[in-house]
Image (cartoon, rainbow, N blue to C red; front, side):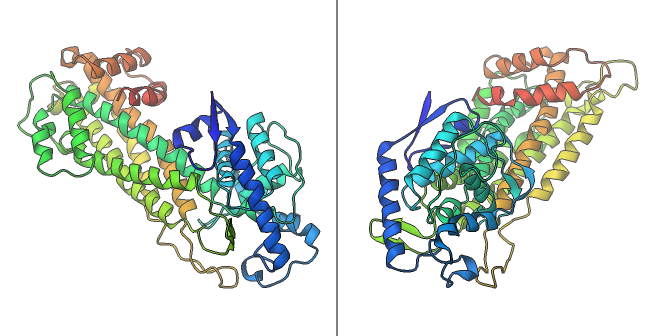
Amino acid sequence: MQVRLDGHSLTIPELETIASATTGITVDPAALTLVDERHSGLLGARARGAVYGANTGVGANRHEQAGDPDGHALRLLRSHCAGVGPEEDDRTARAVMAVRLNQLLAGGSGVSRRVAEALATALHDGAVPALHRWGAIGTSDLSALAELTLTLAGDRPWRSGTAPAVELDATDALPMISSSALTVATSALAVSDVHRHLRASTIIAALSFLALRGNPEAYDPAVHAARAHPHQIAVTNTLHTLVSGASPALRIQDPFGLRVVPQVTAPALHAAETLTAAVTAEINAAVENPLVTADGVHHHGQFHTAALAAGLDAVRGAFLPVMSLSAARLSLLMRPDMTGLRAFLADGPPGSSGLMITEYVVQDLLAEMRVTVQPTVSGTVSISLGLEEHASFATQGARTLRTMTRLAPTLLAAELVAAVRALRLSPERLTTGILREAYDLAAAQLSDDLTDRPLDTDLTRAAALLPTLAALL
């Protein structure tokens, strides 16, 4: 299987397969022809007058004529290659390469065709560059993309694999780095994880509902039709179907952990859907400054990622309550007055701790997540001699969402371990259908030894099950 890159139709699921090296790529020949045409347009504009970055300095040096035109590209790239901090993993680095290539194929950069083809060859052959995380503020990932371009040019080594070095034109440097490809790739991988976690959390919440013998009236579609927020009816219908046939309810009204799952999950789904649209637009966008079109060269601020930053902030703010509601259900599963079972779902001599410690783990994770929810768009900046006096900080928003999505599986895993244990102890509460399938998948991976013992293996195995559970919906 191969994904065809054409500059306008790449999806996030396709990007994920490229990033995971499960599919190869092909490049649309028509898109490469357009790249060639726009490169000629940029060269022509450069010959006629000043073009930002092509024969001038950049930033506050924009009015200075570039000296030594033949060495301008490498000087610009080397001077901007200041990324530091952790190296991005292979999956992220491949996603960056795919995003940047697809953006180039959109035909606005003016980069030379051979550079686009070199990037395609490297991606196809499995070469992975070393890209450092820190060095951007949501107005192009200049440092990381300078690393990538210098690697393509043979100025820096590949972290793994290899690809032939490409010669750079004087006009290739700025077009290659004038993009937020790292920020966009990080956002794409993170929002995809959010969608999976939300589906898995719905399955796990329904298993907890069975274990706690909840009242299904809270999931009656008639209730939610009375206030139809986006996605709320869909979540309700899913839960209503999942818990159909459950044991008779023990309570006239459940605690919030069970009762408000649709109200809390729906905004997170809505925010994730909005962010998905914004990220997809970025993946397929010509954002370079200057932008080369059939009409000429245009200087602009299209590289500013305000829409992406706002979407990232919204998702983090809506995703955290879903996680905190999972923590609330875990606490309910620890309570004998709610389950009819022993405290902490213990099974052993009096004083056994059972799953007591899992609440500590979950509250640690929640505390880490709360730090990431602060809006990044509230930041201010003044750099490059005051010329650049605003930034979106989408880069920081993408990183913090990625942090949340890497913490979330263990948090959800704790609830899954508890729900499965409670249902092992009271198997008559199980239903048929999807929840039975989910339970059987989890029970097969989790130890049936309910005595006090280390729980780290169970949590790790349960976290690894989340994509499988998500695929059930």
